[in-house]
Length: 177
Image (cartoon, rainbow, N blue to C red):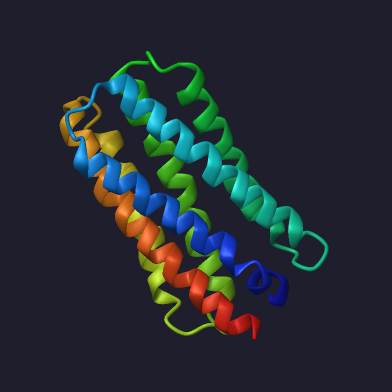
């Protein structure tokens, strides 16, 4: 667990990137789908790289390193698909984000359960996981929603996801001391 806490800044940095993505989506809710896909792809790719680095850095000391590596791989693949196929349809974008949200939510809950004895307020990470799963389910249930609405959903999700990651990152920082 100490190794996970040692790299607290990677978790916090992922949160900052999510908040920045949310701000972009709030500022430009009516941007074209192609630009939204590129922003999303860049965020998912960078988030995935940070998550992979974190997972591999704790590989020798944490038996659950694979959860971070899996989350990172899903994020990198989703980001690459979005970056190299910016003309993809809105439906595919919704499904892509929904799958990413579901996987991330499940892994956030697993992490919260693992950290429950190590940090206080682990419920925040559980809440982030539940919100991720609910967001993914909503997207799968309403895949034909307009692009502006998708942009707002992504913005709210990224904002809450980012705030929770920043919070968890700083809780891990306290644990590292």
